[in-house]
Length: 436
Image (tube, rainbow, N blue to C red; front, side, top):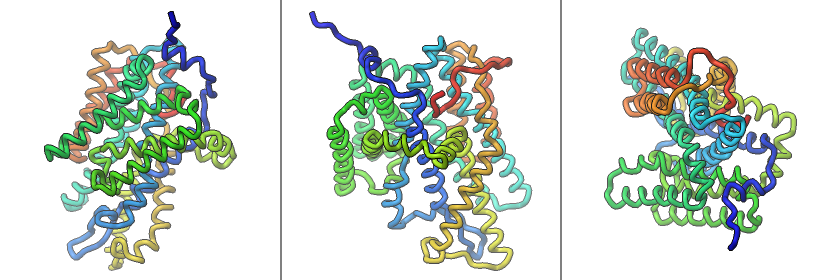
């Protein structure tokens, strides 16, 4: 009788990399930078006779499609999230921790900085209301702020399900990722056949969980164990299929359009990015150890969620100050996508990065505090996670206003309390996206 080696044993037999992969940290930091740059360049501010106008500067432009091929990093972000999350969960179990403790730690590191940011935005909107700013402008600001919060909700869901998905991965790795990817494609097909656009939002779960599952394979060393030719072929094949879907009209060539709702195109992007990452991993690790590169990586690594949560408020403040300043001096702002507008983009982007960095330094303590020890039962944990998700979805669906911000903060605080005790002690889980 042949001896069947379990998936876990097979993975353990492979040589392990050090717990800290500085190359992966560096790529994650680049992803965060890419998100801030993409959102920054999409901010459009003009002044009309009736007052300031805030729009998406990329609407109807030809440049957003090729730019999205460069800066659509969310698929890779979730792959790296799966990589880091699986390693962190396994270390938690090795230290005697539980799945409940792991999930509670993730929830705290994601929602604690979000509570402060949402509260600050709510106060800011209240001050604008008192100052007499038109309601439509306040509503636009609240809507723009809430848009990027989809990531917070989806990442919370993926990390909450990580212990369950990790168990499925250890038992049936290929079957699990195949089922998730097939479900994502099935949603795209049903959406196209029925014309019901709302069906596409089911892929907020299937697409991102499939990409997180791909990160598990990277953490196991399964991908790096493949021949370089095989990995290169997988990445190139995914790219060819992606281009074919663009040419056929199946998916939009604008990868930003493929994120709301998510489509199977993002799975192909994730495969291509993961192939590149695996092929150049050793080189990236060597490069990441250079002093200046390491300093950049270290700055972003401990502030990942803070940067993500604060970059949009920073951009909204910049847009408001730009419009008010122009009206105060009677200046005319350049038309969007004009030569004058492009000439001002470098200064705009540098200012956005600098102010976001300052905000991140100021508010890092909300992300860096150790998570309290989890004492919640499984039902309390489930209710806590649902409370947090409902608070985020509320802002996404209804937009951010003084009222919705207040309700969301209450729901997020409830989620944090349900998943911890009053007296805190350091948790073995020390980061959301970063291996300890």
